[in-house]
Structure formats: C-alpha cells, structure tokens
Length: 249
Image (cartoon, rainbow, N blue to C red; front, side, top):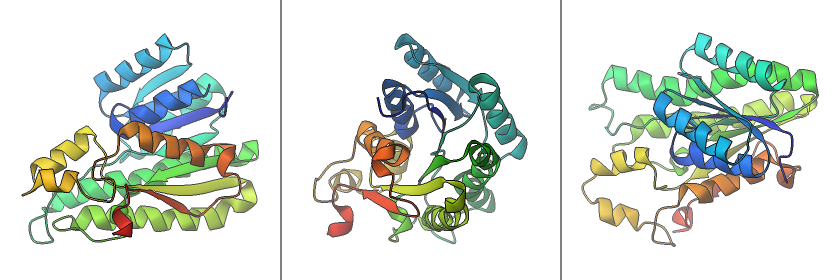
C-alpha cells in the first residue's frame, strides 16, 4: 500500500475531489483527517472511511481563519502523532467579471483559495520539518494557466496557488518537503454543478477538451495520490494538468 502508516490532512474533504481523495488515501492505508465547513458531509466521509477500517477524523475547519487551522493541525497531531501529507483542496468559485464581483465575493474566494492554502501550509510545515520531511499537494485548476470568461477572481486565486507552490518548493526542499500542484479541468463536483448553472451553454462546456466530458472526482484523486506518494519522489515545484486535453486544444 502506497501510503501505509502515513497521516494526511485533506481540506475540503466533505465532497467532490476532497472526499474522493480521502477515500483513496484510506484504501492506500493512510490515516486521514478531513477538514471542511460542511459538518454533515465531513462526518459522512469519516463514517465511510470507518466502514473500511480506516483511521479517520473530521475537524470542522474554515481554512480562512487562523484559529480554525491551528486547531485542525493540533488535533491531527494529537490523534495520530504527526502529519506526513497535506492536501490543500478547499476552494470556492463565484462567477463574475471585475465589475460584477462584489467585494465580499472577492474576499471569500481569495481568502479560501489562497489564504487557506497559506495558513494550512504555515501550521503543518513545522511538524513536517521536525519529522524530517513531508509532502504538500495544492489543488489549483487549469484556471491557473488560462483565462476564462467571467472567472476573474477564481483565475487570479488559482494562479496564486500555482506560484505559491513553486515558492514553497524552493524554500523547503532543504527540509525534505516536496510541494506540488495539480491543475484539474472540469470535474463533476457540487461546486462545478453550481458554476455550470450560471453559464449560458452548460452542455457545451461539459463537452470541452479532447475527451469531451468532465472528470470524475476519483480520476483527480488518482493524480493527487501520485503527487502525495513516493511515485513522484523526484518531483517538486511542479504541476500536473489533469484536464481531459483542454490545454492541448
């Protein structure tokens, strides 16, 4: 098993990519701490993992808030003794161009997508450094690499996550900590369904890319597992675009 005995924190683990990742990590014999603002969904994920005999815990966490993140990391260390893997997956998207987006919507997206990644890494990293290493996987998007219509703040936030990944990799390679980023394309998740509902031609968007369909969350989780495990042991400061061929068109 590729994560045997490892301890992982997965933010945004109550649904979508986060839940699929937590479930796959459990299959690979990791112990998983799930962080999310969705308490019902988070507890349901933990119950699903427990049914498979996996060690798991849910900690209600709003990654925008320092105290929440500190509590999350402290609980993970208290329960399992350390943190080997951090998956910064929590994110939010609200459609709008630069005129349409309200200040509070800007704050929500930037604070969740960028500040959340920053804070979780900030408080996990000292534990990884003390243990002699670890792995951080940041979930960005193809939106980090291209612009999309009425997606200005989300695109900016995911671009920040991608470049933060590079900077973290530079700073912490001497600590034995690898930091990489995954850039999914369209994925069939609750957040994507809400985003598609605001589009003029959602069916056309669903068929974008060479594969002409959205990804399943499980397909993205497989790529996250690659980055989180020793399968990617010679990779840091990089990204994987798992996008059904969108960027090739």
